[in-house]
Image (cartoon, rainbow, N blue to C red; front, side, top):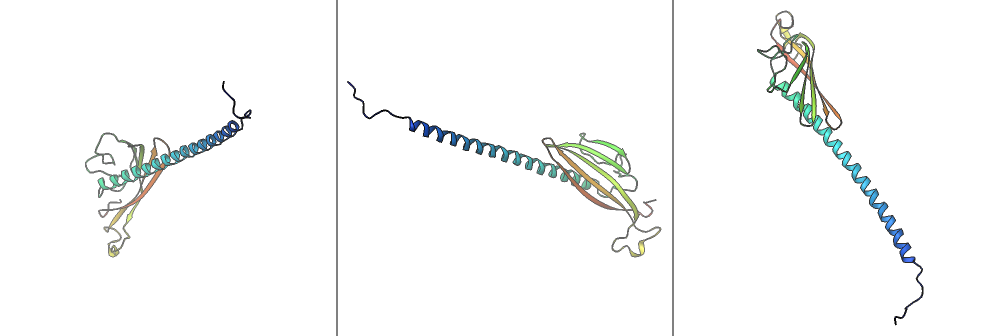
Length: 172
């Protein structure tokens, strides 16, 4: 026969282990919630950086491709009627000179680039001294803005001011 050792057990160990299990479950749920929040923050930061990079890249590409081609009352690309130089067919151009907008989809963002002529006048820059007035140096001033809107979320805007010299009488 089997002999019982000890008396009746009251179940104290079971109660203590259940309480510890509940506390550990709550801690794990809290850590999981924090991890998910950190992932969301990281994803948003990554999208914001991507938007800014795409806007800056498109603005720089536009300025480099059109360097020296700007003229009064038409953001002019030599040999074309549009005011935007493009190297692919994925570009949409709208608007009339001197204000035009171009939209392009880049990796993770839709970038809208707009160019607006602010003014065209005598160039009052350094060294222009006796060149002012009729027949003197003139310059066209432009505001170029790129706005990138992410596929996930967020928006980044980059502005660039441009001063481009035009031939004497080019502002008329």
